[in-house]
Amino acid sequence: MPYQPTSETSDRFLSTLEQLLAIRASELDEALDQAADLVACALGADKVDAFLYEPSSESLVAGGTSRTPMGRKQHAIGMDRLPLANGGRAVEVFQTGRSRLTGRADQDPHELLGITEGLGIRSLMCARLGVDSEARGVLAAASTTPDLWTEDDLHFVEAAARWVGMVAVRAELVERLAEQAEEQGRRAAADELIAILAHDLRNHIAPIRGRLQLMQRWATRQGQETVLRHVEEVGKGIDRLGNLISDLLDSTRLERGLFTLDPRPTDLITLTREVGAAMETTADRIEVTSSVSELTALADPDRLRQALENVLVNALKFSPDSAAVTVQLNQESRADGAWALIAVTDRGPGIPQELRRRLFDRFATGPDSQGLGLGLYLARRVVDSHGGTLTVESSANSGATFTFALPICGVST
Image (tube, rainbow, N blue to C red; front, side):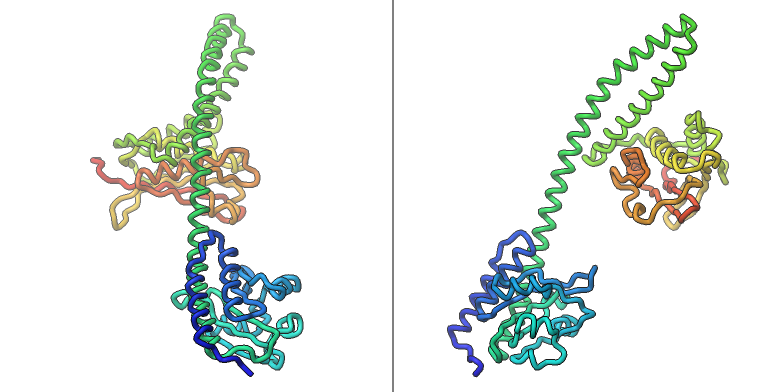
């Protein structure tokens, strides 16, 4: 005969709900395990599960299970994961939001055999778990005893499901905050290490440059052409290393909010042609064209030069040696005024889909990249600092186009 809840039972239910909100676990699974234990104890259940919906597998997964013999058996036989496609009453409750109570699950043709035969469940209660009508999962209580629970018990499970939903939201928030704090700590430590390393490297480079200058003057006086060529090549290598160190320092300044600009009216056409010409060994591969005769923006020419060089280096790196990289300058009228556009197009293999989402992230590198992944990150942040945008369009085997868009404002032409 089904038991009738006494005042003592009602008090126990109320106490259980209070204890649910007192859970302080900082990890979601641990919080749900504690919640399942509390509900199982209040109901005298052989097992209570807090199933959460997992979109990636379209399944209900037992994020929390009471630590009971049946709970352990459920995990052993794989019934802690319920694909929606397999049906069953727990899935039905999740999809419809209608709670369910049965004392004879073994007589239900729509129940999963793993529930009735694998676990021997007879009494089963399920209520949808969620907050503010958002379906997050199912709270399910089970027992091998037939006809164990009543409608009053189901009402308790429904209330518990709402409270467990709040526990889950709170635990997820704590997890996210902890992860963010840990990530911020790692970034701060990494930035500090990068800054120290870059400053130390810069200090070591200065005397090396001095020695090279002495060797260059000696080789010139002595007419040692071979030595002079070697010294010049070493000097280029030192310059590249110096640029890398500058990028590292700039990346830490950006992360710390110490990045500064010196904006002034800048002729973008002249600047772009100078950047192409300065890349002397590859100048013949860079074709600069403009659809306008004048294009001036309020910008920091040194920072903008740095951004453009980084994008051009990237374009040249991935283009075939025989293919040119084109730079097209244009002006565009928008609702908020005139904008300058600089489009850099390469003839490379295109950007893999999986890389596009993080292409402008710091230290983002592709499978064949040999750099540190700072060039495009710095380029976008420089353009962002000017109130502009740097975007990319790419398709397989047809190259990529990086477009600088800079507002033309406060400039008298």
